[in-house]
Length: 287
Image 1: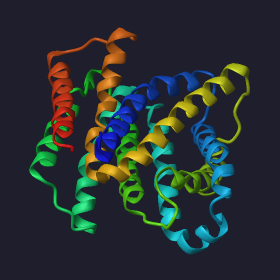
Image 2 (image 1 turned 90 degrees about the horizontal axis):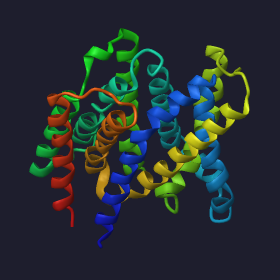
Image 3 (image 1 turned 180 degrees about the vertical axis):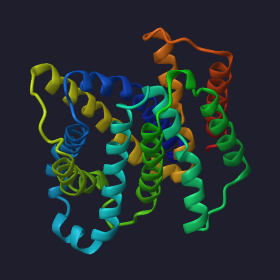
Image 4 (image 1 turned 90 degrees about the vertical axis):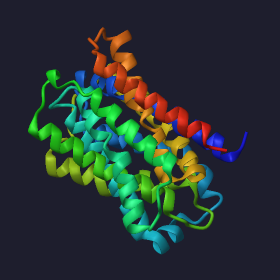
């Protein structure tokens, strides 16, 4: 198996993991969680698991001093992706939020073309069209739309597309892939989490064993997905990684139908098949 094929599997697995995250996040909200503490918990895992190992191999102070602009943008884009999408769940059904969030693969392609002068090949173009149309076919507007929720979902897509491009393009000696997540975690807490919590008065929340357990379990699962995606994106690039990540809403649809007994339509089935087809085409053409 080639490096690209391994990277493809990592990004595909990431999409599958993220597909169950909305359900887990809503569970956290039921126990009184706030978006700020979800972000802080996610960042804490990055620091806990990556910090001790990376402290032995690099000077974090030196890396931050020499690359603070790029790392700040990376952390900010990640922080506000989480804060926007977590907030959007409060206004609309999670399936609607995720569907709108998934305009980001198209945005990644646009950013790469405009700022990095990268061209999209025919296979990527076909898959992008398939997955984009497929995602919107799965959109169930009967679940209700809310202007605030729509804006937050779109903002999360913009921020995440920037995060993906930066994660794939930032090139710091001895700091690659999952190592970047350490700096994302630091930035999430210092730049996005705590200041946002103070401004919005969302740092306070009721504590309970169920709340703490659900937050920790949810964010640990997300951390695993973050690690896989950070490794995978370096092997196949931001554009292909973004397209293959559309497995996420597909998994969300399956979970909704099987476990939550959600109704499904012919459009949602066709949309799901289009997303699956785009992933199959990308996989076949990745060597």
